[in-house]
Image 1 (tube, rainbow, N blue to C red):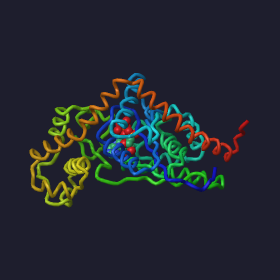
Image 2 (image 1 turned 30 degrees about the horizontal axis):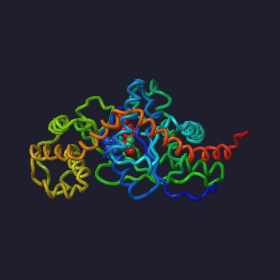
Image 3 (image 1 turned 120 degrees about the vertical axis):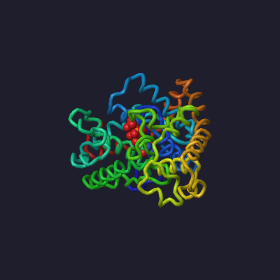
Image 4 (image 1 turned 180 degrees about the vertical axis):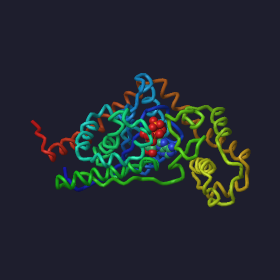
Length: 339
Ligand code: AQP
């Protein structure tokens, strides 16, 4: 294997720590489908080993793994063109993560804002896995020599850490083996915020179901959640500048823009001066129009989990064809004896 040629390759993942949200769809899956359509070699992963960094009920983890895979398939990820699998079926991820645990520095991990947010004041009691999470994420990406990682804004810091790990590994071992992966963060759906608090992102595991749109929510639930979404009393502004310091208003405009394939400008051009009583139902209708075909297909797929498992197995085999030689070469570089 040549150490310096990196063909364009995309890797990204979603952890099955709950049901899929609109944030996962707009921030990740929708763009993955677009990248697949552009013809870039793409690897998409249900990152179940990341999910267990916090407690997961085993039966719920299995269901969520199927749901996340079904969401990717239903949104247009084609398992014959992209590689789709769940992380724990490719043991090379965990093995490379160990090597990276020995490359990454504790000080780097201490700077990770996601860890600080998730651990909160409870840092002594969270799992060691949650702390080392970015090192496993670096392994996920670099195991495939991925050159591009489409992620939401929230994951940017972890991709930067991946670059730091690649650079230190290459420097320490005097090789040019791992690429400097680029995060791909663009468009209005990059940070979908919590519907009840515009300063927090929309998460699968947030406390209240009212703060997020789940991909499997029905039309009535979607309408109710947008109706109850927090906003300020002012109407929609006359220009995107008027969204400044109005996080909840900006979030709803961004969601509309992302779902419609437009921009803040195009949404404002249509709704300038409108009240929330007009905008929220329009947003709910648009969301239902875009999400219902996906959720219908997700339900159909989830009724046959054995078929999802079969497809994940096909992806696992294709993933291992790439991953195994990269890990072998890594072990050689590090000086670990192979018999
Ligand atoms: N709110 C969001 N806006 C934009 N993108 C988002 N993503 C997640 N939430 C948003 C993107 O989805 C991909 C997969 O993320 P993940 O599920 O693996 O991890 P996460 O970001 O920690 O997701 P959650 O929903 O917040 O999970 P929990 O609550 O379990 O911690 C990533 O590309 C992410 O950017």
